[in-house]
Image 1 (tube, rainbow over the protein chains, first blue to last red):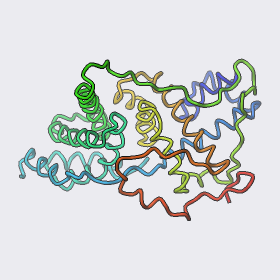
Image 2 (image 1 turned 60 degrees about the vertical axis):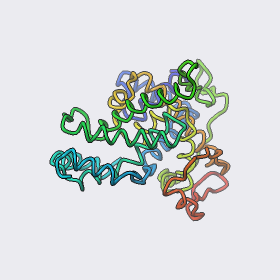
Image 3 (image 1 turned 135 degrees about the vertical axis):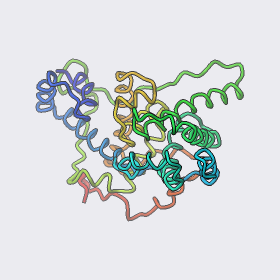
Length: 77
Length: 243
């Protein structure tokens, strides 16, 4: 497996979706290619940080208007 | 990512269907900021992004009775937003530029160095290990998260949409494809390019402390002021280790 092929599979590997048939070749490449292994590790850290990115807060400036519409739609307004 | 809405989807939906306004308020408070983040990927106009989100909520109110639960509540709401956003952003573009052709989304290349084709270990520019003693330190650092947030905001719109939904919201790949109406192959390309750019920004920050230029925002987000805490910076040793 070439570096380019390995990089192309890193997205699936990150998400644990690598096809079983491709796994030995991918893992073999990672074992012998330090730059690719480093790059994969970087992507792991990056994705993990993205998963922990605080979600944007702040409610709607028109929250009350929405609640009134909701109450009217469901018969409580 | 686990969140209140995610975990109690069913209970929340039950409340919504019987007209529980507290349940609806919870839904609005949980999702509004995130919907706005996605809406901003469709338009550069903050006012239009707000209108898209408002219109999405009206669509949610009208559609709740017909929601069949074939996707999660959150995925359904994101789908409504994407449809509204496309329609409203296109209408706005026609109003502003009546004679122009619709713009094609330009995703650009990853901006990354590319490994040498065909040979093992042949990279044009070898990635350098970050030497993190604890990788979790990255997402525990407010400053590092800010670098990541800025990198996401700077992504081309389709890459940003894919990353926001798949990696930040943790919506399944299949559902993201349904929401954005794209193929799984295209989603993989968008994620690959987007993650590569965010990795690149993080690499610059972790190796020499430099943060990418912040894309200006028309409005400060409510929590932006809290991110200036200097104690939140990620301590890096000369060899790249986090202290």
